Image 1 (cartoon, rainbow, N blue to C red):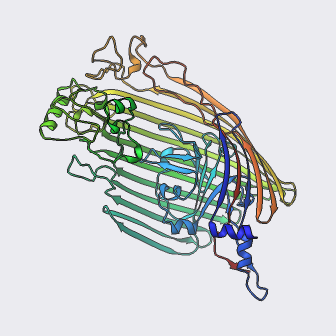
Image 2 (image 1 turned 30 degrees about the horizontal axis):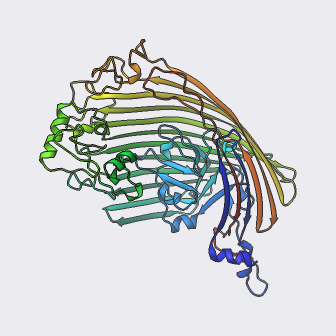
Image 3 (image 1 turned 45 degrees about the vertical axis):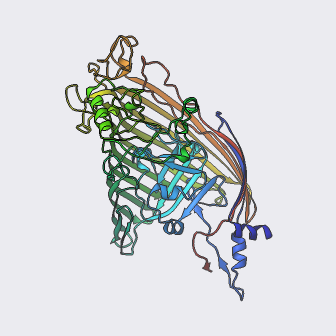
Length: 633
């Protein structure tokens, strides 16, 4: 009892020993949890024999409704009160509340990298965690970075969850639950104002269309901000991390009978924002020592951010999502079927990085740009310096400078996907055995393009291919279409061996069929950038892989590959006492492979990525406080 009281005062004690390495069998863990709920009940026990009841935290991360104390996994739960008190509206708001989870979102709104216990996602690949909203799995990485409204609970499940959610859930899962509309008519509106001309609005109208049968919520949100940073070259304009976003949403819930529920949702949203919020930090230790210049080997934590690009960055995203989930209760089991259509178009234009490599040093426009800025007395952050010509030793340039020598970039990432899942769940043996089984299908079409253009002083033409002779002509281009089909079957058994001991087994088989088609024009040539070397000196193909020395055929054949994996998970839980639980689990996570863009002849190096796992031994002593106020019984 003394230990529990001490924990209530201090918050949480966690002792962890961890050994991480790549391996096929990915997770084995052991943890002990101690909950402070009984202590809270004792301390708050009313007089006169009156009983005080504490509602347990119920989680659904494993697709069964179960107490947080009984789940054999590491789960962080943010209830509605916590979410409201923290004013959670966007992913960075709740990620910051969870230990062992971090987020990077500096390139564009559609590229949000979430790191769970050291496992990160990668650009132009699918996420490493499962993202679920109200029981529906979202596969597009761009879907995560959104406005969150009507939140009830967020669960972050840490560790590979392939047996439950399938491919690409090697790091864990983020499970979001939102509030359904009901019989009560409700009008809500909220607005806020902050520094940097920041304005937000969130409003909704909800209520019954047919009492006890049909319910509707219509909502919208708006956010506008100049951002934190300014472009010092362009008169301190707020064009670095500015952000504008709006969404329209509707949710229709039909409950025509006691056994049937149909939950249909619609969302359309648009984002207009800055992009590529980066500075370069040099890591040249040899030169730093030779020239006694610490800035050539700078500690990133000491860096002062200065933004000077001559290009106004622009990130645009259009999102359309339509989903429906049907739940039907039979006498022997519950059937759940859901379907999701998602169409998210994402593009960005920004300054380039070519000045650091001298790609445009022979371009008269680049040379004149350096001369003009030098004459105007423009200076660059150290260790960079600007002379009358762009080439070293006259100048020493990094990326994203005021010069046209950086070139421009336009990037496009569009994805359409349709997915459907059906599962049947039930129990037997007077509820001691719970079971679940089902299947999943995903059809995904993704287009990825990266254009490096010549900066002619006319801004960025937001097209992937601009012919020579036109402003902002394309100098290098990567452009591919990816078609993916995924098929999966899964099952799970959860059995109470005794009142205090539980064991579960889950398994899932995923098969992923991937195709890629290259869309770069094979006859197009550039004017300045020579990635290919001999025999070119300018006039090279836009895609370096078309160099005839490596690719005499002069084209790219479509490529296909299949990735498949069975992902098991075994777990055991022992409720040692009402406030103390021990659990162990072992499982395999699976992240499928893909195709690499290469600067050589296409080769068979697009093999599947080895599953990445972690072996950990943890001892956790943690208070479990109720997520709702105490209730008298």
